[in-house]
Image (cartoon, rainbow, N blue to C red; front, side, top):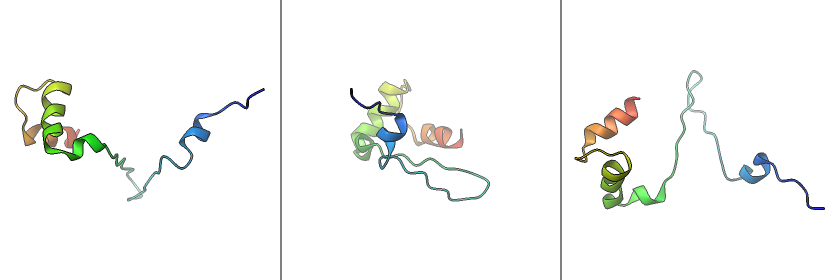
Length: 64
């Protein structure tokens, strides 16, 4: 019989939590597709549904 695999087993070594401040926890994610300029525009327009890609949208996301 195969051993049961838990979520902790799958994520072990794949996910790291970086604590930068005692009163806040920041989640820093790496999304390879967003490292390319054109993909950022695609993310803002197609995925989020904004008609015009703007830095103001990124500010809004960051503030939230």
